[in-house]
Length: 117
Image (cartoon, rainbow, N blue to C red; front, side, top):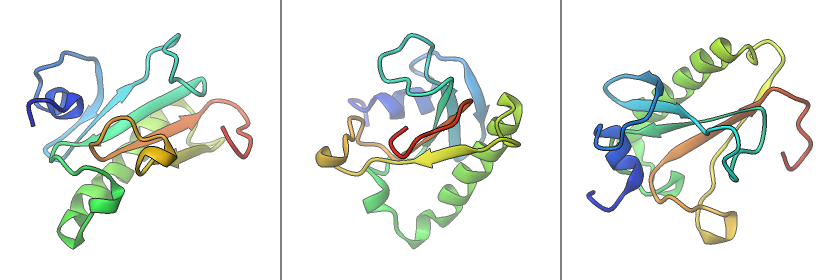
């Protein structure tokens, strides 16, 4: 989708430093100092296929979702948070704070996380 930021990132139209990428998913860091960054480690894993949110995931997306979690585990290991723990979250809809309507998972870590982050 031409108007979707994450589709443009996944397609290489927006140049960012990728932490991980394969044929199904892309992972990238939320830059330090960015207002949406919620922990010392905060990265996203997005699907290459445009899926609007977790609510739109269907059986045929199973491999994508599995790959997203595998990518998180690998990148978390690289950041050194796999041993101490990290949080995986997604927002679905306006009330949950979803701002990009493209399937993505947040990974947060690098400190003790309270119930809200």
